[in-house]
Length: 379
Image (cartoon, rainbow, N blue to C red; front, side, top):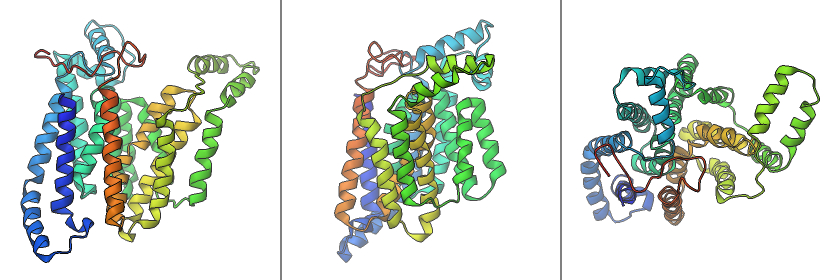
């Protein structure tokens, strides 16, 4: 199956990178072996950009040429046909403009995929030395769901991640410009403006744990139902419209999935990991931690509002693709590193399994399957 083939190629590249480029992380002691690894490291690095270009280009065409495949395919097809027919559309202006300009929905898909992956590549090469671990996490955790499905938000997320360069350089005006552009792609990107408030703050670990736990209590109880019932008693017409809209999206789910646990467990892991980060990387790691913290709070606090909780939190939780490699690189024990690598493989493999087995006839938030993969030139 093509999804697994891509996945295992990325796993292989990740392992080769760790062995040849970052051999010291496994405490290679033999001088002879170390010299040989250094030679291979030089050869590997010289081809790294070519490999990244080839894999990225393949992913762009893989996402851009899909047909009747992916979470929101028919949603985009209907929106595209509506624009072509002159019917007003509520989608963001970038999609409307592109739909008017290009003769095929596949070209729209290609443009979104190209911009999303290109911007991410720029940020990856600038911000990390473990390129293929990040690409592995990106493919499993982001690409399949967003670039292969919810593509407008996927591009908006890539722009938001790219904007973190300017946050780290204290170029707030460029950060704000990026978020404005991202909001033209998907309005929900405006949520990412919160990052500017916490960018330089070192939040005490106790608060990083207490606030998300409080969010869990609020999100998994009837707090929002009671809160909206109280607001309904206020005789303001416009307010009542907002409340009615909120009630329509309210969903109380007493079942807690593995994903619900995962986000909180990862947050606690990242909080603990802050103590092991080298001083020269502390500022960047702390920024990612604060961003993930915001995403965790949004995910649990607004859990009854599924769209806000899920899609809203992912702008922030997507930084896990950078936090995990940073934490990996700063661990001292080779056995802990090996254990963490196994965890990353198991974690990403679970995503691949999920997206290759879900069925749109069962899952109501998607309208086309991933398997079998179909493209514009045939099945």
